[in-house]
Length: 129
Image (cartoon, rainbow, N blue to C red):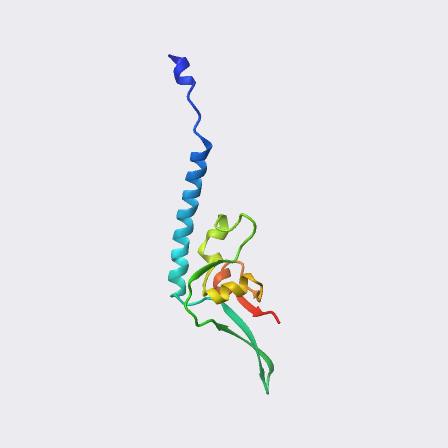
């Protein structure tokens, strides 16, 4: 009797991998919903512009894009890192329009400043010349 109970087949790794991916996907979906709710369907990309004031000289102003947001941008990236760990959290994602997302990924809009504790709300981009 003891020989039959001791010789159980181990659980296939593929099942463990599928469960892990399903859990990650569920976290990703929940965090994406938080991002969409926070943005109010408006692009969250903030672009820094330099303006000239005759009294103060060069003054920088940050303006938020006015277009409809349709894509999620991961502020923390890397090979195989997107959607895992900290990258999956809503505070490390932005809801952006297709145009801004393309410019960010092509490095036309370059990240100038952000607070590490709340990257999405404080991320400011500058247009590369």
